[in-house]
Amino acid sequence: MSISTCIINCEKSVRLKITKLLKEYGEFSCLGNSETYDQSFDFILKTTPDVILIDLNERINFCHSPVQLIRELYQYLDYSPFLIAISDSRDKAYEAIKLGCSDYLLTPMTDLDLRKSLFRIKKRVRNSSEGKICLRSYSDYQFLDLNEILFLKADGNTTDFIMLEKKKITAFKPIKNFESILPRNFLRVHKSYIINTDLLLRINFAKLRLTLPEEHVIPFSRAHKSQLTLLKETFFSLEAV
Image (tube, rainbow, N blue to C red; front, side, top):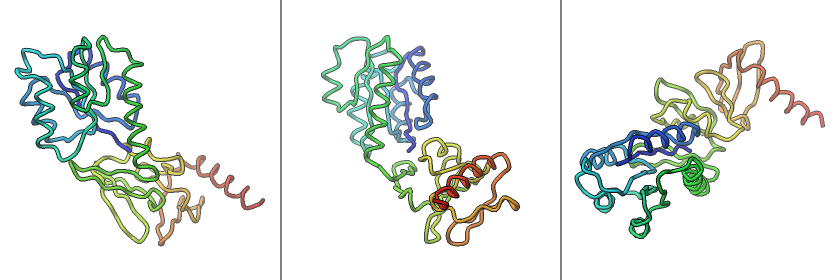
């Protein structure tokens, strides 16, 4: 699960607070920010973020109303992003509800308020894709069953998902982006590989090799040997019983 965000029409102090908090969670990635109407419009259409944090206060640099931006975006977007409205007063709260905003945050904003808002979104995304991972490329969403993933292989700034039945699906993000959001049965065993331990068939400690179904042989590094040793002991104890 990877949730992309962007920050629109926010003051510098608010942008810094949001960016700092997003870095605490691997599920969220910040695509960037914009402070003008046209740039914001172009940026959102180009990056199609999952979450838009937008200050509804009107500012000279923005030229037009942020509310107008949201209304106009709905004419072009082929999906519904999560909207988090930000303001220094409650005056625009009713407007935010009509726009379909997920939350309304008042400035000065506390870390707790923002954290709650992000976790509500994370919960909704997770509940809608239980047992799956979503790979997203612009407005194209592909949902993979976690129990059908054999392993992940890094290929520069992209990641190949090797599936059962010899299928390969490419995600346009580096492998480190997936390490923190996959469930615990997915284990990093090498700088270039993450495996699904539920499908592991064999560990060869002498040759530093792992075997997965469909004759896939994966190398593992000595840095990850202790984790695999612990995994082996767990499997062995289950077998012994």
